[in-house]
Length: 524
Image (tube, rainbow, N blue to C red; front, side, top):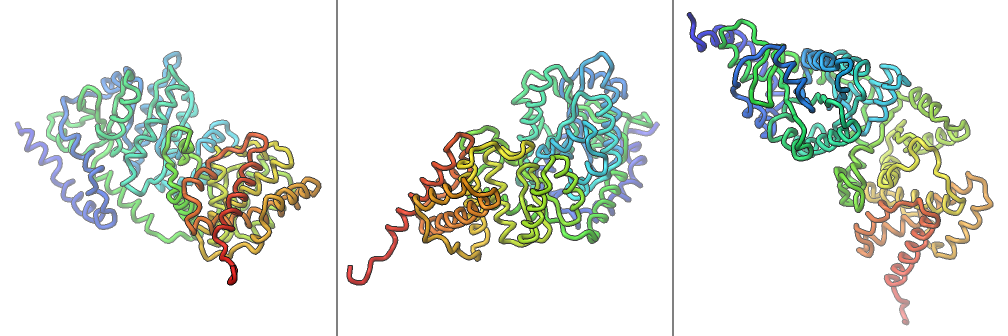
């Protein structure tokens, strides 16, 4: 009878030869496999306790409170196995089941909820979560999992945040996901939480460790799939087909594919991603980069999990970005939120002039033509809204007295202009700065109270640009610190009179600063 070593060699030799060529090609295109974070996963699971069958695996799943299912994104069999596991766990009359997925950003939860309520169809859902652009793997098996969950689950949640491509930030994504899972537990105290997340995140020292710190009393089970070392080790078992193995008390590994199939699928995806995009440039990374640059400049922590001196998980508030080929989708979105025809017309004119606009009612950044100056201003406008918790999202304009509305819009233009100068210093200074004073501001506000809405808007823009220009100059002189600037972005304006107080206080401060730095006359 053949020994385990011989069995392993015979079962594996041809596949290993084929696999070697695939892995070489992958390493040329994607060198990330050498990263410590990914190596942590490879080194963590080298052996197992014993072989189990699928029935034993299901019993272990049924006994858990939280089930972390490892996903090899390029392998459709991995998502289909997760869908089967989910459907089998969702017994009628048993505990409810909730699904969390890495594929969808937490910032896009509102889109997932719209699809859950059947308000949008599959195609719109796929486009708006940017599945092909931000994820890029096969849609059908993932969508099949979501459909299964919509039929059997109590809820579905997106768990991920940016940046996916920067492995230096991957630990922050683990902490973010653990926090979101903890929130799910608070919303669904009796549910079994099943999570589909990339396999490298499920090394013992990664997401499972962070999760156990916040949910110490929960029974957490990790279900791996097709781990290479375990597969090759199991190839030496006398049984012909190994369905699963128990790695430790709280880790199992299921086998539904071979390593060669895994890596061939990944190679095919790499090849597909290398093709030219015929639909034009994707501007989302550009817009997010502008926002991120402002965050770094202001020293705002986008991963902060509590309100206070930082907005709570600003990373989840990032806007959807629509580009030129999304015109029809944008019109449908505005129609769904009942944006008036007059307002839609004004937006069209605004976009025609500037090329882009941020829409706080729907938290959408629309770019018809990329112009750095205006895109930077709109990025700063978004950040101002996000730092205040997106007060207009889904609500339309916030109800304010005309005076408060004028000063709130002035602050928005002020910070938008200032942000654009930070990102694009070549922007010319505002020509109206000489007229800035507390009295001039109050006189303009008084005049705007009796003016049509369009004049109020243009007046707020003129004043905002003028004060923003002065603010930028004061920052360059070192008379305004980043701490002060951060406070301006973070201050909430809900309280009556608050926006007026901030505007006039800032004007007084800038006026005083300007007088101190003005050169004396020759005979003084």
